[in-house]
Image (cartoon, rainbow, N blue to C red):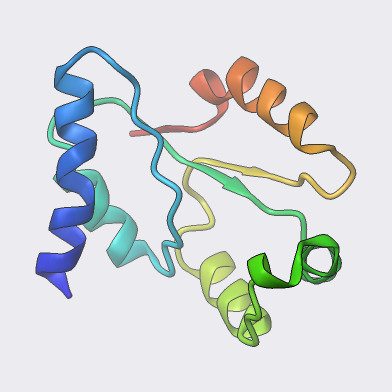
Length: 119
């Protein structure tokens, strides 16, 4: 699993080296994984933004997707409890329940650089 995780994060370093800002969309279930992933990004500034609309909003939004693109995930409660308990003091936990995707993206672009910084 560690090898898999290292291979997922290596392109972010390469993209950053080329002068671009990488965005990694990934489930980070606990503080140990968060610490490990931050260590893989070498000496770069890391912004950690959790889009956290809540379980019911996630389920509802999934019903709006084309059936071929639905994410039939049954572990929301377990993941939600674990994530809030583990790395919950890190980064920006952004409740996006009332926002459209465009509004969410705009706020992330405007605010992540001061709200999501990982030290």
